[in-house]
Length: 178
Image 1: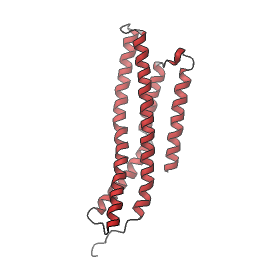
Image 2 (image 1 turned 90 degrees about the horizontal axis):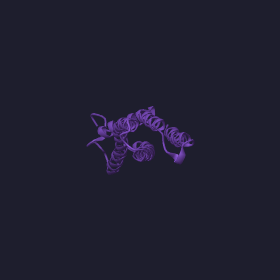
Image 3 (image 1 turned 180 degrees about the vertical axis):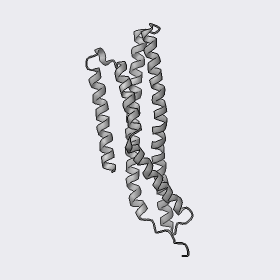
Image 4 (image 1 turned 45 degrees about the vertical axis):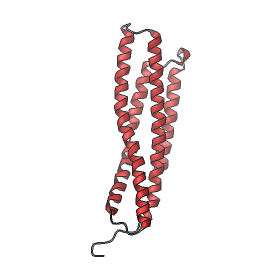
């Protein structure tokens, strides 16, 4: 699962970069247009709602449940160390999932700002220099979001891959009556 997820994210990153570059090819000085900004916002939003992120969340929930089951019941110092490591892994994954949630909100705000910018420009209330500058800034924000999403996603996937090996090393929980 994790290799497929990582590969799909890399393909998505390549698609985003190529798509952004292709949309800008016919424009002078590589100025992004509104359509590409909206498309990239929607693309990132769809990535944040993907089955991959749902899957990561489910695996993390299962891991949290397992950690909770061992709370105050670990049989050895080794089990306690493994549980500490697993808790760290859930922290990394929770950081990624929180990033996804806050980024969705930020993308909604960016889309609203883009619509406002578009209306101001069309009504003549801002000059072309301010308009172009704002578009370039929005494009940089989108690229930054994608880069952070990619790095946090890969870190979460690597962490979850490690959790499988660690969790298998835990001693079985004592059965009632032991």
